[in-house]
Length: 277
Image (cartoon, rainbow, N blue to C red; front, top):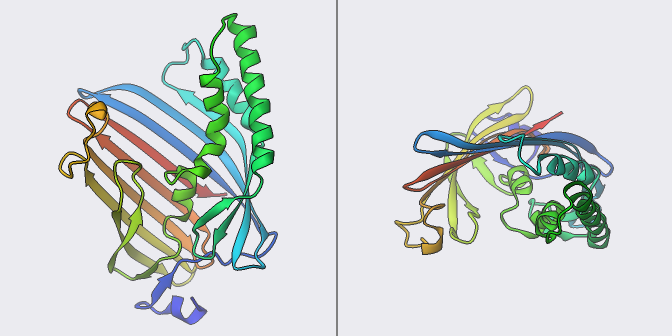
């Protein structure tokens, strides 16, 4: 994308990361989720944190990035839950975990670089959480929950359904015309393969060189014969709605992504937002 193209009202916009080595940005992420059963809210959770992003290398055909997570704040609907304080301390332990990974120039995830460092960090977190369980609750328990808390920080980079990464890079690599709908691939997990998201470039801010997008994907698991009997209570229809603002260099300024999963019995809503600080 050149400068003149972005100033033309009817021009194409291609979203690509055009970042300099050692360039740094800080983002605020917030993840909220709640479940509705018969019109009543049965659970509500909110986690917020910051991610420091740094470009370590851009000299090859791809980019090496570093994301450092910090300042976790956790809110759950049941503060009197027996493991509430454990969850709080678990998030504190994850503060400072960093991931170094490569992406293509179109924003495609290519793999982790510091796997050994992450594995060591996870092991330390796991041991500390297990120690907290024993010391605070005097119970012998398996490490499933502790391992999940530690592993959860790294596992998303190994998953196609990674929330932070997909929200950040979802529109990268695409070319868009103003007010013209296009389709891009989107992963809905194991049950929704090969789905498309409809994307519209709604606004070109000529002064600030910022682009506003709105996207939606609707999927009917039952209607598409992808319903699994063991998941009847959790899956039926799914909607993914996204609104994003991105600048000409490919840095997201703001994004709000809403996932709504509904069945005959309940509805689950997940909202993920990111904001450039």
